[in-house]
Image (cartoon, rainbow, N blue to C red):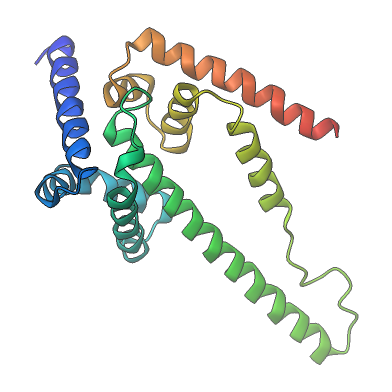
Length: 201
């Protein structure tokens, strides 16, 4: 199949998923079952890529679909296609889970280090103290992302948080490749400016 043929197929698939999610917003359980069947494999692959654990990913995906069912009425096809909307929910849930696990692991290591210092009769000093610098950086990035338009945020999240190429982002969203590259370029410019302002403060 030619690239143009693939683009038409992707657009048709996106339109079908958009229509299904519109029915889900009205409480249609059959539409939800169809939406789930057509997207769950890709959603699971995304969650596994972020978490590195199929068990955690299964919990994350289940939570993502519960959220999709409850918030389907908030979906706006004008901002992003249904699959991108679902991916953003799934990725958010996966990152939240990853942060919780990392924080728990950091805290556990800190406790063990502190216990070792006490048992060894040494001063704990700064050892064993959880470093929250990474979490501050995450909050700064989240704040910067809020300055983007919906299209810019979708583009940069798919391209950089999910590792999609420009052509894959274009296929997922139905945007022309030139438009996709423009959204990504402008989003990165905004993010760079916002993060530099944080560093100067």
